[in-house]
Image (cartoon, rainbow, N blue to C red; front, side, top):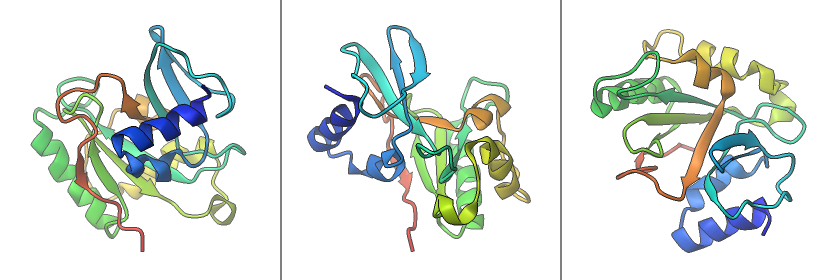
Length: 177
């Protein structure tokens, strides 16, 4: 089974159609056998022991289509003490972005992930390397705790074989208009 087939199977079996908007770019990250990597192609074979799948906000040409923020709870370099604090800050960021941001619990269910669609990569002219700077620019005027490491990677898990309780649960949906 290819990674693309695995993603379609996950969406069909679990009803996780919400992942389609973020996975559509084909820049897939994989966690299996205790290590993580970016796949070369959606046609790569999906490891039998795959533990998590996700993606970055770049397309196959290296153009940036979306950015995200990882609001850690209880770990990381700038952690929140409670999930509710992270959700409150995520909502303030979402408000600044006119509702054009998805707020969802992380795979553990404790942390909070915020994802924001930037628009057509051909029109924005942004490259993958611009992800961290663009994410920081969008937080101007909105104080949130950010760990520079995940901010620089701009890669987020969208499925895990064994998510934590409330893992990937939606908090606020992205407004697409």
